[in-house]
Image 1 (cartoon, rainbow, N blue to C red):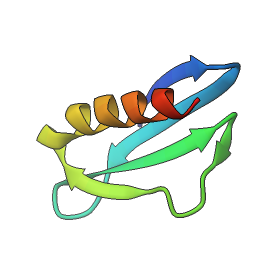
Image 2: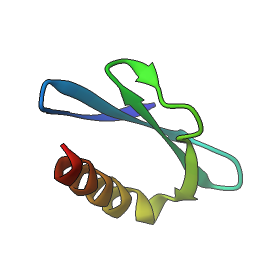
Image 3: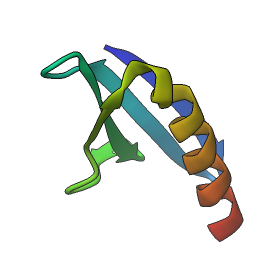
Length: 63
């Protein structure tokens, strides 16, 4: 499993990235070490980096 983490406003965000079914990747959001309920999503490997970049920018605009 890989993890992509960043801090914003004293809050720690982490995306856990792991293999899923049918050659898809599962990305799950954790905030301050706690899994966010219903935050897991499946996607093709080639979409993961763009998805994580968009999510990080989106979270940053809300904080």
